[in-house]
Length: 100
Image 1 (cartoon, rainbow, N blue to C red):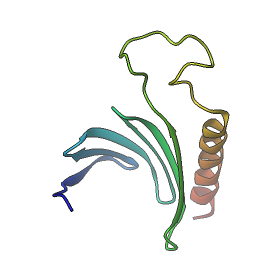
Image 2: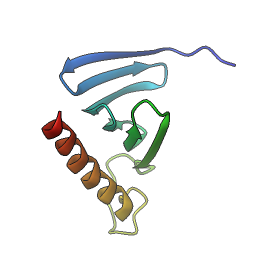
Image 3: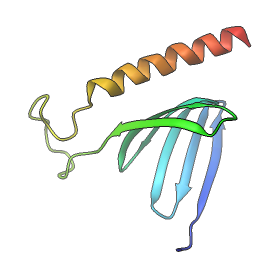
């Protein structure tokens, strides 16, 4: 097992800067749903707080930084499920905040 380092810095409510040995990323969201953007791509995560259950989906950046996408078949094009999940996360988060 290797040595790991991870530090999260809260910038604003719902916005974090994540520092680790593998790089820097930014997370936006709250308890149960968040979106993380970093050099290894974009990830959306939905969880049921307190249960340990979660689902993560995402995209990876293209191999050549700055390369123009050739269309929907490009390697970094988001899958349809990712955007549906992101929409559901947003709706769920808004409903949770309204009921809280």
